[in-house]
Length: 164
Image 1 (spheres, rainbow, N blue to C red):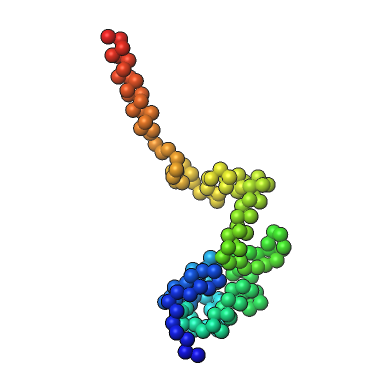
Image 2: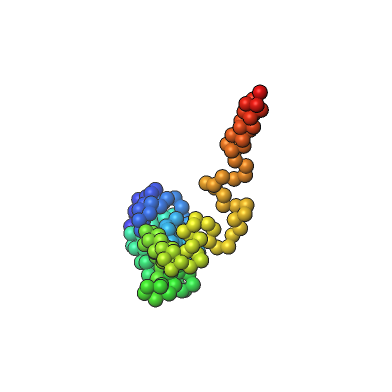
């Protein structure tokens, strides 16, 4: 069972750094946070101090199975990222591109039904009640418009000359 160390490994559609500890390395997967990764490591009975590049194929398959179906392995419902799905009504845990597509479809649904959050999303404004008076101004003109002031100053200079 002496498997060589893998410095970079492909796991669940993500390149992971093999030199990281298992839980920290798993948290680099989209949809797997640090707490969920700790729970997966515990449920899959993997040494938490081991490096992710040193795990055997059997251990990696146990970890992948625990991530794909956490409820079957006894991970509590509060730790999964998709509870009572709108379409299916089921509790499930999504990772990678599946999670990104589901989030995008949720935002599109909010836009379609014209909820407050959907309107804020469509306008490109802050959605969760943050202040907008002083923050979130990137991409827009902030403060005094220098171009307009320069043109006004030039126009003011030309007017006295025309009178002479």
